[in-house]
Every structure is written in structure tokens, then in C-alpha cells.
Image (cartoon, rainbow, N blue to C red; front, side):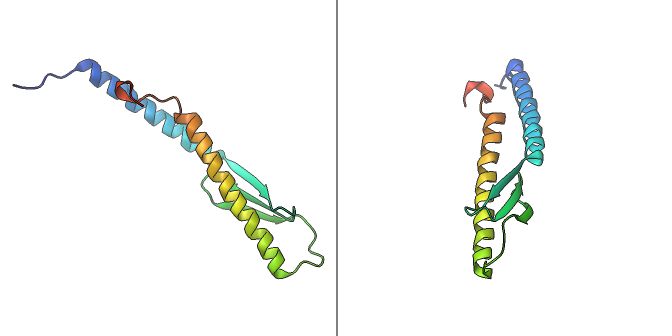
Length: 109
């Protein structure tokens, strides 16, 4: 016996797919615009990371007087690590804001 096609379910599936596509596009736009700026604990280095996780800018904002190479390297590494962590947090928040209230087809989450 052939299975009956539920037109209402198909319509809902198509509408759900379109909502997902719209939200994915919205998420992509938000992540493209996202930038996170972080400083190392001593406020010597500023790092800007994009929503994609790429480092966009590193700026030495403090004085290098008396600073050794290893100290500067440590400050840069701390700022980059903090910026990546902050960008990951921001990506999760944007995702949650975009898809947090989304209800899957059939009402299940």
C-alpha cells in the first residue's frame, strides 16, 4: 500500500528549511561583522580578533622600556589567547541569539 503524502507536513518542512536558511545567513552576517578587542593583563598589548577567529590587528600599547623579548612575547601570547577565547564566547552568544528560540520540525528542539 503506498504511503500517503502529508501536504501539511511538507509545507511545514519547506517553511522550516527557509527559516533555517534565513538564520544561517543572519549568523554569517553577524560573524563577519564581529570583532573582539582584548588586552594582556599588563595592558601592554592589544589584539583584535574577528568572528572567524583570525587575528586582525596586534598593537603594542604600552612602553617597551626595560621589557625583555620573552616578556613581550608572553604579553602578546596572553593577549592572543584571551582574544581567541573571547571571540569563541562571542560566536557562541551570536549563535544562541540566532538559533536559541528555533523549534525544529514537529515541535521538537
